[in-house]
Length: 129
Image (cartoon, rainbow, N blue to C red; front, side, top):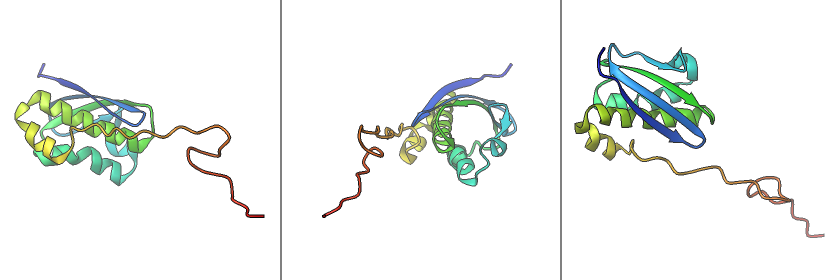
């Protein structure tokens, strides 16, 4: 069997476990095709970014398991996981991916809801009288 490389990516509440190996360029997420799983062009674009940048789109098969969060967070987690797996497979790609910002975990999280309020920051309507 050919070499398989593994990495994990995270964003918001989503976690993506990614395995890459040499192949014809298929991307499978939770046993579904990429476009069938996300159903959004923007999510597909986000996932393809590191592959297009490193010119490995048609040379690698990617199998991923994604859990938690929403579709946007899952796509971001998948992008990070793919980027990290590419570096495990070929460390020479690190400067290119680093410069593009694909190796930085986005630290933003949802702010918690405060008691007595409608949301994290929303206040009740102000009435002067």
